[in-house]
Image (cartoon, rainbow, N blue to C red; front, top):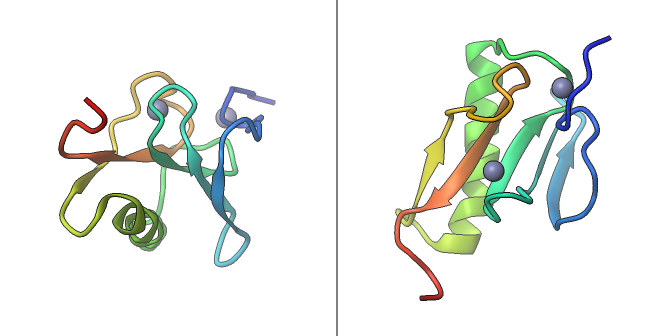
Length: 97
Ligand SMILES: [Zn+2]
Ligand SMILES: [Zn+2]
């Protein structure tokens, strides 16, 4: 069975939500980027359009509360682990400088 860091999600960082319906995914702070990230709780990368839309909606809700309306982008590029679906919400401005 394929295993990766995203399969073994650790609770090092704050978790915002853990969905079991309509499918399993979680939203938590990414420990390398320190921004909210949605992670599918299955080792696969292909998503149905409805699954993708549902995750974008849920992640946007969290990002809107954290950064404000229009102050973030949803980044679906999977740089480090390209074979396990995840996406980040990133602030559009630098913060804390
Ligand atoms: Zn995985
Ligand atoms: Zn990250």
